Structure formats: structure tokens, C-alpha cells
Amino acid sequence: MTKCAKFEDILARYVHGGVLLQEKDALEKHLSVCVSCEKLYRGITDIDRLLRQMPEKLMDPPPYLRAKILAHLPELGMAPLWRRWGRWAAALGAVAVCALLAVVLYLGSAPREPRLASAPPLVRPAGPVPAPASAAPGPKAAEETPAPPVKAAPAAPAPGTAVAAAPKVQIIREVKIYFYYPPATRVAVTGDFNGWNPEGVPLKAAGKPGLWKTTLRLKPGAYSYNFIVDDNILVPDPNAPDQMPDGYGGTNSILLVKGGNSV
Amino acid sequence: MKLRPARAPALLAALLMFPVALFAQKTSVESLCRLHGIEQQESIAQIREAYVAALNAGISEDELSPFVEDILKHKLDCAQMVRVLFVTTTLRRDGLPYFVVFSKVREGVTKEAPPALVVEAAESKLKTLTLSRDVLKSLESSGYRVLDFQNAAVIVSSYLEKGFQPGEVVSEIRNKGIEGAGFAALAGVLEKPVKRKER
Image 1 (cartoon, rainbow over the protein chains, first blue to last red):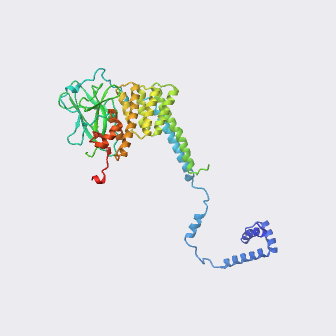
Image 2: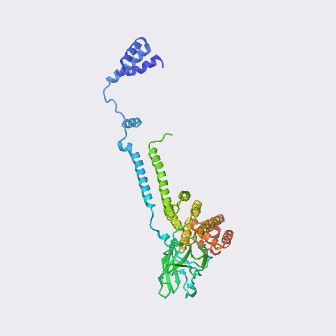
Image 3: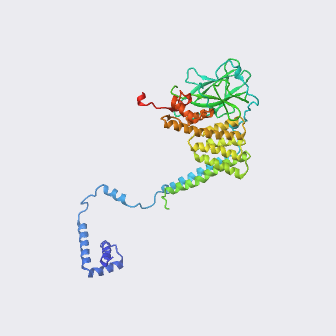
């Protein structure tokens, strides 16, 4: 920076009385010897004087000027307290929730009562499976309901055990299940449709002695199932058109619930 | 690395949440194992690792936790547990219906099957479901549209378990159509789009 340039900076403040005493002395000395700076000083003071002589409110500033200036000013001062601490408070809140969750999970993992799905397992008969259906007078194990679009296992090739996933188009079909077994005092059906729940879906007496029935509402798919006789014997459905080894030494009956457009 | 002020609390919360979640899983699996007689720390660690892998694959803890509890009650040992969890995780990662394994294992529990057979049945499910995926992909390449992949995979796997070969299913459906080939259960989950000239 040249000497004159240094004094130009001081000069601007000098006009408005904003210089230090030392700067003022140095500037005045410089103005006494430097013609160009002295000329500049005269020019500034003249303009300043002329401006001061002008009447006030000669011209109104445009309405947007204030907003525009404020928008370009750097943010000064502190943000409100809630704004300064809000984010940290949210983070601390999240941490507290997590800690609470951990405690709940920890307590929840303590020993619990046996769950339904793990209730005492049913016993498969040691010998050959009782053959109730051989003497059955003929009701089909699972058959199409008259009115609703229910169809169970036609003569399609028998698939194995399977679980029906939820189809995108939710078609629910009613499937009537019949089971003829006069010695039974209680009959239920269990399978893929209820996660092989040991309690099963109970069958009701169908009017005729020894005949049991129930209605299941199922999505289209392939289901393996068994009957539970007197709460402790698992037997396959002797009238099901499809049977398959269950992989555990027994037999599953297969129920095919058709998809398609008919509802 | 300079963080923007708004990101710092979020990062802090995320960092704190991770160990909390891990701790919750750890205690849950560990207490379940101990409850059912698995005491060895190494075994518990292996089961926990398989459990976390299943969670990371996308199986929810709501589904997994009761399942693990069931198989622990059925006295599967550590290695068997890990194998069953591996099957479930693999199916989930491959986009196949992993819940089939849940059902098959519960069937074994209900029928009081030996644990070894339960594991074999689960692994057999993995095999047939993987093959059924190949069948469905072949049919897709032949112009068939799979409307519900998961359900279709379950039904195809049922036919495969019955004794059909994968190639046989594909060729029968190609030549005779779904119902014509006798695979009626696939009718709602698989369709052949009608070509314009066939209308």
C-alpha cells in the first residue's frame, strides 16, 4: 500500500471525525505536503457540505430497500434459546427413548410362560394311523361351498407341504372341511394355514353321528394339514385327494385353494 | 471433518442407538438360550450371530423371536439352531418365502419330530424353493407373468416335492398351459399375457 493510499483510508474517517489523534496529526501533516490528497480532501468535504445543505426527504428510498439490505446482512446476535438447544434436546430425547426401549427389551427377555405355539406337542400314533375314513360314508374332506367361491383340492397333482403367501389380490375363499370318525369326542384341524397350532381349528358335529365339519377362510395357495383327534392324535385326511409324506415320518393331506378370477 | 450443526445431534443419536439395539438383541437371545439350557458362551455367540444375520437380512424381530423360542424349546442344539436360522436368512436374502420354514419347523414341533429331522426339513425347503425360483424365472423368460412371486414359489415347490422335475413343470406349462398341465393352483399367481394376434 502506498503512502497516499494509506491516508485515503484515514481521510474518509477524518471527514466524519472518526480517526485517532495520532492518525489525525499524521494526516494533517500529509495534507500539507501532498497536493493530490489535499485536492481529494477538498472534494470530499465539498460534497459532504453540499449534501448537508440539501433539504431533507428529497427522495424516498424504494420500499424494498430496507428488506434487501437486511437480507444481505450477516446474521448477528444469538438465535433464540429454544432454537439453540432444540436439536440437542431432540437428540437427548431420542437417546432417552432408546435407553427406555433397551430396559423394556431387557425386562421382556426374562423367562416367560410357555407360548401357545410351543404347547405340549401332540403325539402321532405309534402304529398305523387310524383309518377313520375307510369307513366314512363319503363326505369329501374338503369341498367347495355352495354359494361362495370356495374350492378345495380338485384332481390337481398333489403338492407337498406348503404355506400360502399373501397374494397381491386378496381373494379369500371359504373351504368346508368334513371328517367322519365316530369314535372321536373332539376333532380339530391344523396345518400351514394356522402355523400348525397344536390346538387347531375345532370341527363341530355336522348332525350325522360321527361326522365333523368346519369352514376355513383361506387365500389361494397350497396348504398341508392334519386332523387332531381327541387333542392328542394327528391323522391325515383320508378323503383328501392329495397326500404327501411330511418329512417327519408321517403324512400330510394337501389342500389346494385355487386362485384365478372367480371369487 | 466438519459437521453442520443440524447433523451432529442426529449422528450422536444414531451412534447411541446402534449399541442400544445391539444390547437389546444380545440380552434377548442370550436369556432365551440360557432359559432353554444353552449355557456355553461360544454357542450363545454363534446363535446370536445367526440371529442378527437374520435380522439384518430383513426378518423382523417380531417374527424371529417367537420362532427362535419355539425351536429352542424343541431342544435343537446350537449347530442345528444356526442351520435353521441360516436357511431362513438365505431365503429372505434371495427374496423367497422364508415363512415356509417357520411353518415347517412348527409342524415338526407340533408333531414332536426329532430335531435332526426338523433341520433336514428346513434345508429341504430351501432346496425346493430355490429350484422353484428357477422354474418361475424360466417361465418368465417364456412370456409368463408371475403375479405373486412368493405364493407362486410356494406352490411350485409343492409340485417339486411331489416329484415333478423343474424342467418338467416348465415344459408342461409351456406346452399345455397352466390348467391344461394340471397345475391349477398356479392359475391365480401366474398368467400368460394374451398376444394381440391371439385376441
